[in-house]
Every structure is written in structure tokens, then in C-alpha cells.
Image 1 (tube, one colour):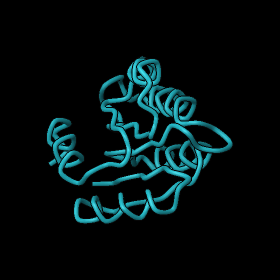
Image 2 (tube, helix red, strand yellow; image 1 turned 90 degrees about the vertical axis):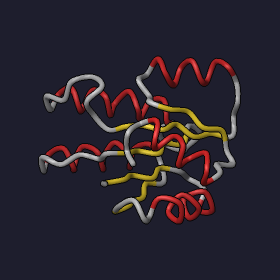
Image 3 (tube, helix red, strand yellow; image 1 turned 60 degrees about the vertical axis):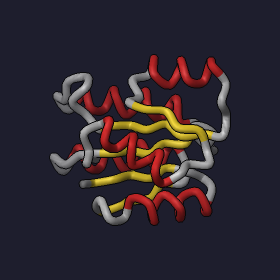
Image 4 (cartoon, one colour; image 1 turned 45 degrees about the vertical axis):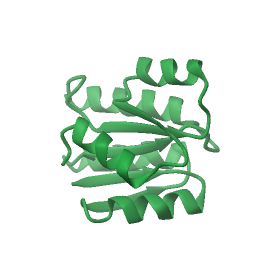
Length: 130
């Protein structure tokens, strides 16, 4: 499985890498622009990420904007809605509006930090990634 971990917090990235490293190759992005660049580069090579763990609060471009751009890039490359990368939005914010916006932007799951390994494994099963 090809995985992209996007979080501006070093500890969060490290924890996610520990949790997900056994599932496949993990790439790292530290802000929303790096996420979009990584997805675009993969799509240009006719590859794609199977899973993107995307923090909402990141510098340069937040997770909401990055997700919108990811979905547009997938569409541009002929990937139908629902057939692209599975995106799990992760954040320390638990506001109802953030959750609604994340799903409106076509995320596949939403998790509140700190993320526990068992909860992440359950989400991966729900998304048919394990």
C-alpha cells in the first residue's frame, strides 16, 4: 500500500509512521502544498496513493484546501469520485463544522487526535485497506 502522511507536527508523523509502516511504504509531507505536490507527482507517473492521512491545521495550505485540490487532481487524471485515495482527516479539533466540511470535501474518514493504533486499524478495516 502506498501511504502519504501529512502533518506539520513531527511527533504526530512519527507515531503515524510507526502505526502504518507495516502496511506499506510511507511518504511524508509537512504542509498542504507538499501533499498536493506529492499527489500530483504520483499521478503523473500513473501511480497513486492508496491512503492519505491528512492533518487539517497545517501551514501554507490547510487540510481542507489540500483535499479539494487532491480530488480535482484525481478527476483531472480520470479517477472517478470514490475511486481515488482513501483520505483520513486527522485533527485535534472536534468541532462539528470541521467534521461536516471534511466529509463535504470527500474525505473517507475523520479521526480526532491523539490517534490510537486500535482506532486507526479499525478505520483501515472500514475502508477495506486491510
